[in-house]
Image (cartoon, rainbow over all chains, first blue to last red; front, top):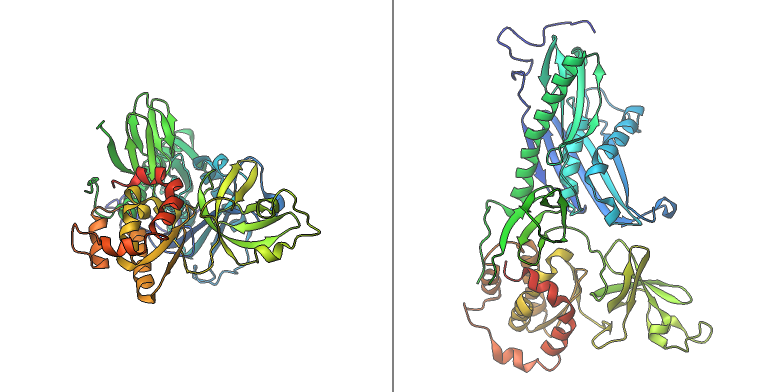
Length: 246
Length: 261
């Protein structure tokens, strides 16, 4: 890729004023959709994404049901107004792929064998896209799953890292994704210390690869803290200690 | 009393370490016990558990549920019990052993849309739950105001030995049927009482995990602190509290889990 302009200025600041290992501002609200069993809204920089979880519920069509476990179905979708030029609302090749990797990123965290013959549907709707929407989507979906009260081994946090101007940086935004050298989205379970999604678009050597992965995991851990705080706030408010009644 | 440590948890949080038994909503990872749900973790001598604060109803045998008759085949009714599985009520349960699909008209006993109180007699991973209405206090519900709450809030709504629900019933002069599946039917003589009872139930649902809930419910119902109206309760006791509390007996072991929140 040819560099049209420098993505890191002389002060070490990136196009949106962040340092190399700084996340964009993240805000998560839990339980925004009353009709869903669980939901979350995430603002990940300029990304605005809604995630809604329905289930466990009856599987339709019935032949999809599995006798020993639950079926997890994910839909990642970008609204026509989420990008600067209108996006056709029909599922594109990219959306089908992201739906699949998102399902695979969430599946290891869920105890699907607890709900045989049922289905859990996860809908991720991108209202505004700004690069890294699959990571933000996974992050929101994971919070929505916890909100829906589905048994989980861990919460999945996701964050990307990448290479711009030959430097490894955390949390790539849209401009950096398009004009940078590499983009690596990672989903990670912080307690189990397991990676559930690892993609790479671009070229990295061995050293850069491990550096980039480390950076992404560091980002995931920071994202996890925000997820946890959002869930705690929704369910327990400002109380952190149990108080006995009567 | 043995030491019970309580803690707010989200999935993945380590509750404690050591050789304790995971009871429910807890799994063991190495030497530590980890929560699988958002809720309140309790580590006691008998084991570690998490009382969940969200989630759909998953049937368990001997649960008392309130369901809606959806359909019937020639041998059984299909009942919606507000869960991911629909329950089956065998026709023999209603007509007796000598039930004949040719002779007996199932529509006459239970029509589509009827509400019933039922007990789950069998449920496992492989089959849909089977229910019965042949027991004391089970069967068709003739009238009442129908509301749904999250099934995870049911133990809190019942309270310690039915204290919360009795408080609401007595103060509003209503009778409240509660299914473990989160379906509730409120009956009573006057509409204001029913409306107030529903308001109180909604309040319990919203604020189930917060402390001092009983006090707030009492002030909503207009009961002065530490005084429960007994004369009213006694007047409608014969059909109200006896029936209602025996119906809830099945739930109470669950109720105890959460009563002292």
